[in-house]
Image: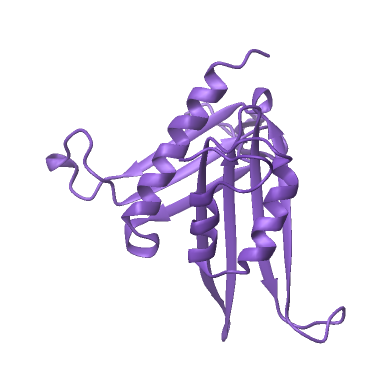
Length: 197
């Protein structure tokens, strides 16, 4: 992806935000503030529509990689409520220093794995990024394997760090967004591999 210059969004990033059709000026202004003039090395724009009962709710996530940070932007729309007589949107960004990123997990779903060859497009990608802001612990009762044993063996479990999970699919988002997500995951993995703590 093209680098950003002089505090304005990279032309391709801006074009992809415009193409999503989801409050592009609000999304761009929000990102521009967090980018603070740093160049954009790689990015993903993911527009998602979900149904909430009989209403359509839209949401856009923009991930932007700079030389020093991961910028995570979310924009959501809300129906009129006690605080507003009209529908409104909230846009927020989080800037995460690259040295804080603990894990970059990429899960690929291949349609016909037996016929898969290197470089073949995949059907779906899930990108999970952890930097310690959100931790999840799953516990279950421990046992010794003896079906007759009724002793208390305490608990066993796993702790995971998954601050962001982004799922894109060819069917919902298009092959270009799936490929863009894989490119972004590779760039982020490379950037975090070269950082020392």
